[in-house]
Length: 244
Image 1 (tube, helix red, strand yellow):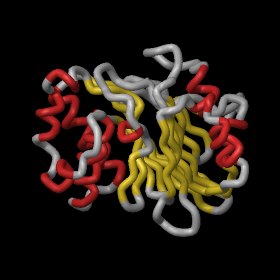
Image 2 (tube, helix red, strand yellow):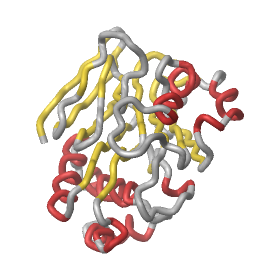
Image 3 (spheres, rainbow, N blue to C red):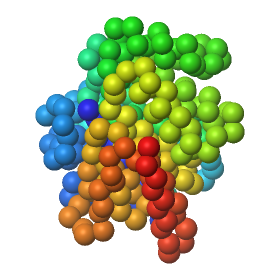
C-alpha cells in the first residue's frame, strides 16, 4: 500500500531521509513495520524536493528503491528543506509505469497517495473522472487512482480551498462513491497537509511519514480518520489536527 513521507525544516541531505535513517524510506519500502497490505513496496519510487524557488525538482522510476544505487549515491549531495517521497506498491490492475509513481507534481505542489480506491479499475474511475475538471482530465498521463485524486485536489486548490480543506473534500467525495484507504500527502514546500484514512501515519517535528524514521520518542501516531498539517519555522514546528 506504499510508504511515503514529507519533511519540512533545516536543509538535510536526501540520503538521510531516503537511505540513511535507521528506518528510512528505503527501509520502510523493503521491510515495512506498519503496513496492512503487501509485504514490501517493489513497484518503483520517487522523490520531489525544493531548492531555492517554489518549483520542486522531481525524480521517479519503476526501479525498486533498494536497488537504485545510482540515486542513493547522488542523494548524498542533494540538500533540501522540503521533501516529499514515496515507494510504491501498485494498486490491483494499475500499470507499472513512472506516470503512476508519486510524487505527482503540478506547479509548486507535490502529492502522494498511500492507499487505494476500491474497484477503481472496475468502473469507479469513470465516476471519479466525472468530478474532475475538463482541463485536469485532459492532462492525466497514466491510469493510477493517485493521479486522479491529485487532479481533484488541484481543482479544489484552484477554487481557493486551503490545502487541508482540499484534501478533506476529496476524501469525502471518494468515500461517497466507494470504500478506500486514503492517506493523502500534499506540500507546497512551506506547509504539509495529510490525511490518515485506513493506513498508518506518524508525525515528529515537521516530518510526516507512514512509519517513524527512527526510534526517537518524539514520534506520535496520527489518529485514523483525521487530518494533520505541519509548518516549520526557525526553531519551531507546529502541528494542527482535526477529525474527518
